[in-house]
Length: 135
Image (cartoon, rainbow, N blue to C red; front, side, top):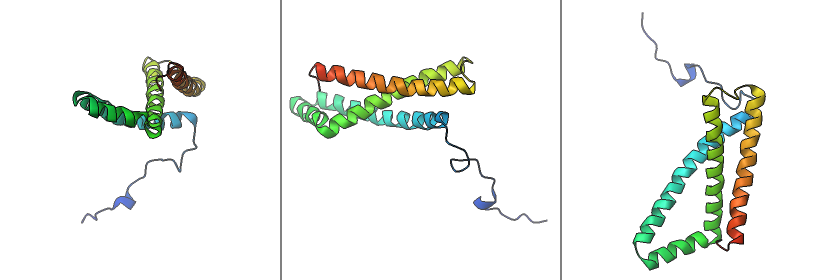
């Protein structure tokens, strides 16, 4: 008996977005991965800041001018949004790891709480920064 090689089309497919109905916990899972990856990019910005700081006043001034530009502020806003989202959803996962909040109603409620915290914390930090004249 000979074995016939199988191609990718012969393999069973895993359920994906076209099969499952969208729900809030699916969205939070996807966003947790996206914000985690984005925070790696933020780490590179922090590293660039440290290099500019060590390179002298001219390099540091140029870097801070870039961060102070409209694009720089938009990037910093996105980083703060990602940071607060990832923090809140990480705490949610720690609660789940302890065996709490795993039922559907609690999981959905905590997902909306994560979104609420993310928006409130991001806006609070930016309002404080504007009021203090930092931004």
